[in-house]
Image (cartoon, rainbow, N blue to C red; front, side, top):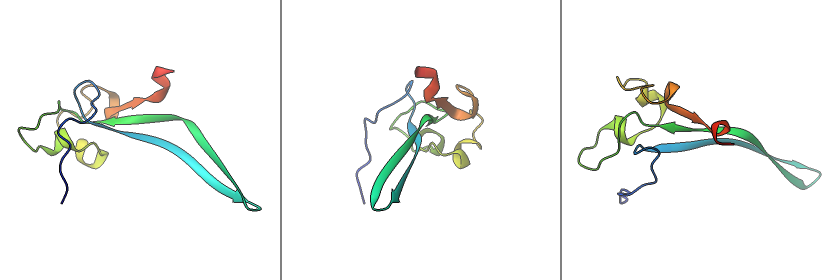
Length: 86
């Protein structure tokens, strides 16, 4: 059991998670890491509140969000690209 974060970081009053991509490889005992500059935030389709546990408010994954009538209401596919902010 864990305590729920009551004041999470929000994007435009909605929950989000960050998707970024990297690879770490080893060649002859030397580690190298590469990151992909592009990534995105996955957002929820409804504004955050703690009065109710609604999966469309609190969960950001596509499997849940695509079933919401608010899917894509704010951003196409509930995704915000990092490229937009460079």
